[in-house]
Length: 334
Image 1: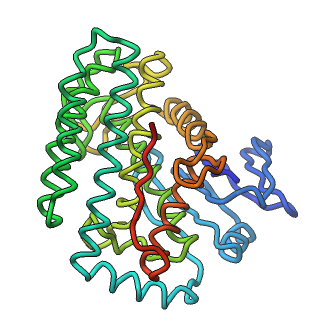
Image 2: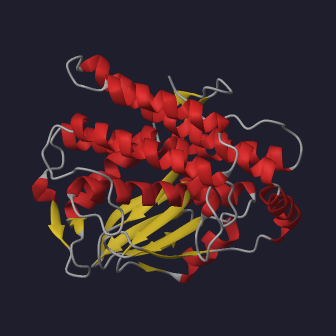
């Protein structure tokens, strides 16, 4: 199964029988069997026909609309009334302080463990790189997270660990692109621009996984509920940020696949650094390649890609919510 990214401005998406076709000015740019598409992500001025919309709704395929620079606009939803009871149980679970804190605690532990693993890999490759301190600090933060008694304390530990981690990530990146620490809104350097773009893509994938399972993406455990905030999707991606996005960012930068010339200042938002159109396509290619990487699942032993791993974590949450499983197991790699 694949995600269909549409980035060619002025192109159109059509459905010819059982095949999706992407065309522009009468020329077919791409053809893909409709049955292989599990999500459509549209960037900017792309037209989709009514038959395509009907098919996406009938099949429950997630369709995300973004600006040409990746800013989220909205998505196409189909009717999901069959999930009412499950979502009712989800709401009860998030209102239970002990349940919510326990699950959130393990999500943070998984995130910190995977961040630490990523740094340890680079420390083995470059023994002279000063990463021992950050690696040990992340280990200590994991211990503190296990003992956190409430969400507020947990978020404080996560924030502290994030400063340590991104400070160490700066040492790992071989290009000098003005990256010193994590800046989200707006991203003011190429590294932060890539991280923000990658995390946004990962959130879309997590929202799709949440919808497939039938949970509400807007009611989470670690992240608070807010207007239009996909809290559960943000929960799910925590363990996968370093495994999917951060590793992809390091790959494209350390191999000079993207350089300072791949970015430009936004004319829409002061101080914002954004990817140039061709660089968006390049990053999407490498991001999708990473998401489709097949690994042995650390909990089930299955041979699955990372997109399927996202869904398996959501299904695990559904089992906990419905009482079929007692303890959440974070996705941790070695």
